[in-house]
Amino acid sequence: MKKPRKQDITEEAAEPPPPLRPGKDEMNFAEFPIALLTDRVPKGQKVIKFEDKIYDEKRKRIVTRRRIIEGSEEYGLPTATDDLVILALIQLAKQKGDFASREVEFTRLELIKLLGWADEGRSYDRIKLSLLRIKGVNYVYDNAWWDGRQKMWTTRAFNIIDNVEINDSRTSYGQGGLFTSRIVWNEVVFDSFQAGFLRDIDFHLCVQLEHPIALRMYRFLGKRFYVRHEWEFELKEFAYEHMGLGRNYEGGTQIARKLRPAIVELEDAGFLEKLSDTDRFIKKGREWSIRFIQKSAPALVPLPPATPEMAPDHAGLAAELTQRGVAAKAASELVKQHPAEAIRLKIEVFDWLVEKKDKRVEKSPAGFLVTSINDDFAPPKDFVSKAERQQAADAKRAGEKKADAERRRRQTEAANERKNADAVAAYRKGLSPTAMAQLEADAIAAANEELRDSLNDPTMAMFKNTLRARIIDEFILRRLQDPQNG
Image 1: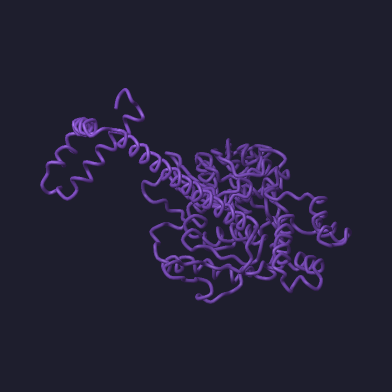
Image 2: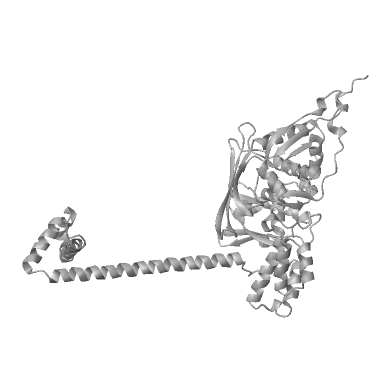
């Protein structure tokens, strides 16, 4: 039997399925950077840190979220390519078992095909390097990992994958089948998959994007757009904490220049509305912000389902709609067709408009509410959410409470001073001249050396009587409070 040639026994024997359209993205990974924006790691850098602040609806207060990414000694920090490999692994986990098992088997050729890379040796080597590097990276989400089951921000430290096995069937002469590789997801990540904290993405678009910033921006903004279609962010926080841009880009003009090519790429892809620079990058005094509007009909990006952050409770949501005049049947259809979080936002905007007696809800309140959900109305520019109003009210109450406590403290202090002054005056009045003279001598003798020197200092002559009276009054007060030691 003729010995097969090496090139005949390759992973090409496995016919991979076409790329998923749409794909899936884990939303904690979409919210914050999980890798550098480049494949060239700065020399000596082993840690990346990000931090932001948000209002936590459950805790009713502002919380700080921190993310720390620690590279291994051998393989270092994750890069832009590794980030894309992680995204491709998520697609394989969906395709091969719908996230039913932590273990995912695959051939490297499957990943290469998904990523659109050339079927050549360096692609296989790059996949191997990514898998080993991802395995060695430690992620610390300090109050920054959304737990879909507890419905709250939690602290987690983990590796994205716990185990890696890499086999190379290209060197397996005479073997009847392929030697697959495999990974085992970390239980924290896998639990988030199973809890459904995922959103639909156009994975085909992801692998076509030229700029790593464009991919990061697509994932982050796509997660935000399901709430509303227009967003404005503080420029530095957006660039540093959510895009992962280096802090050496300090000025608004520098940051805008770095972000612009990625924005143009997403505009050309039909994901973002095109805006002029003055509308996109807004300068207010020394502060800059950045504005995004989702394209009205983004190609191949379906609306994401309701997320675990606002897990749908159909009966409860339908009841809230009917309480506002929506017919029961219409309410039932709405909660089936739209994400729960989007409906809750529309209800909150509706209640706000009703409270303000806005003309838009006067004629047909229920009709306006239904249309706002179906047509996905953007919140009014002056809309203030319940959380923001509650935060402002809490801050006002806290300020009033603090001011009231300070006022009571001052009143108590003044009352004590009056009481002490009256007691000292009464004591003085009850003393004979001889006794008073002795008390004054005792008071000055008991005073500390610095006070006694001040009484004899010519430069203090104009304050001598005041200082002497103070020394005597304090001596009397101590005697009244503690007769044995006065």
